[in-house]
Amino acid sequence: MIDAERRTALELIAAEVRDCTRCRLHETRRKAVPGEGDPDTEVVFVGEGPGQNEDREGRPFIGRAGDLLVKLLGSLGWRRSDVFITNVVKCRPPDNRDPMPDEIAACSAYLTRQLEILDPAVVVTLGRFSMARFLPGAKISQVHGTIRPADPETGARNALVLAMYHPAAALRTAAIERESFDDIAGLPGALIASRKRRDDGAGASSSEAALARDSVPATAAPSAPLPVASADAPADTTAPPSAMLPSSTGESSDTDQLTLF
Image (cartoon, one colour):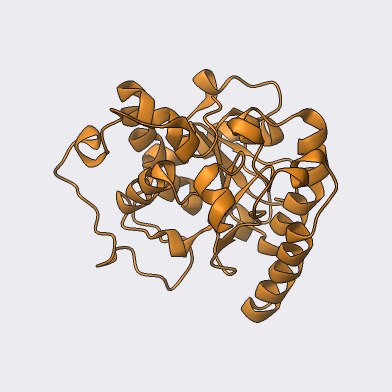
C-alpha cells in the first residue's frame, strides 16, 4: 500500500470514528479523536484516551502530556510529525475517568484497522490500558522500557512493542520523568531490531529484541529518508531529562490526557 492509499484509508477510519455511536462516550464528547501523523511512518504511539484539550480540538496529545511527548521525541532528534499517534479509546471518558472494558471493546476494531494499514515496525504503548492491549497481564512498573514482539491479532502483525509510562504520569513524578527519557532512548534500537526482523522474515525472540536495544546506535529515523535531527525539535544532549520537562506544579488534571499507569 502506497502513502496516498494509506492516507485515504486512515481518513476513512477517522470519518467513521467522528460519527461513531458504538458506546456511551459519544454522548458526552465534543469531538472524537481518531489520531494523526505520518501515514508512511514505521513508529506508532498508542495512548489511552483523549483529555479535555484533545476533546475540544479533536487531536491527540495536545495538552501538557503532549508537550512532554514532543520533548521525548526531540531527545531522539525526531518530531511528532515523523510518527503516528492515536489512542485505545477515541472519545474522552467523562472527568478523565478510566475507560470501561465495553468502551475499549467498542473502539478496538478502529485501532486494529489503523495498525493493519500502518503496518508499523514498532508500537510504543503509553500507559497501562494501552500496554494491556499488547501485553495483557503485564505490570507497567515491571515492563516499561522493555521490547517484545506484538501479537499479530492486535493489527500490528510484524512489530515490536516498547512499553512506556503515560507522559502525564511523568509530569507528576520525577522518577518517572527520568525513566521515560531512559525508556524512549531504546526506541531507535527497537526500530533497527524490528527492521532486521522483518527483513529476515522471521520473528526475533523478545530477549534478542531487548538485547538489540543496547547494542545499536540511537540514530535510526522512524521512516527513511526522514532526517535524524530536526531544526524544529533539536535534541538536547547536555541537559538532564528533568531539565527538559515542565514543572508539574499547579498541574490541572483536566488539561492532560488520561493518567493511567
